[in-house]
Length: 221
Image (cartoon, rainbow, N blue to C red; front, side, top):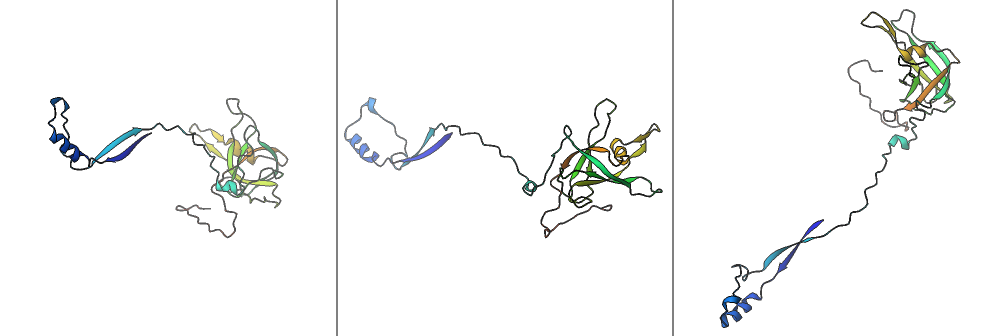
């Protein structure tokens, strides 16, 4: 690290030296040429010094802790390779026969092993394999129950799922893999669950906290 030190050097003794030099004529070999202004005033000399600073230890990276983590919000407790295996307790269609689509309300047992908060999601892995022979990828669904669950004992989690069925460009009827799997579940069937997911858009624990909700145009729920 280079540092610059300013030092003031006074040349006040120069006039006396000049008088002594005038009394005895200088020899050609001893002639010294001074700057014209140096004998009349102090000259500020800029002295540059170079210091080698020892490199300090590298800064330690600290893990950013979310405020929600401080509040006890659990995320990703169960992952796709090791999902939680729950059971379907209820699965009820909540749309009428003449409705344009089917929506089902389902309740899964968790035995309290998936401590979620309102606003979080869970992942569901459908049974079977895809066209490449690999297990289906998980699908995320917003949780449709309070943290206490539909039974109020914090041992269940609920979803509301719309069955996805559409016709592609070739005129073939296509069924969504996970939505149809969930809507067809029978009570007692096992369900592979991951999560919970999400920690920012959650309701605060403080019941007196001010919550501002903003919606864009229509269709806010």
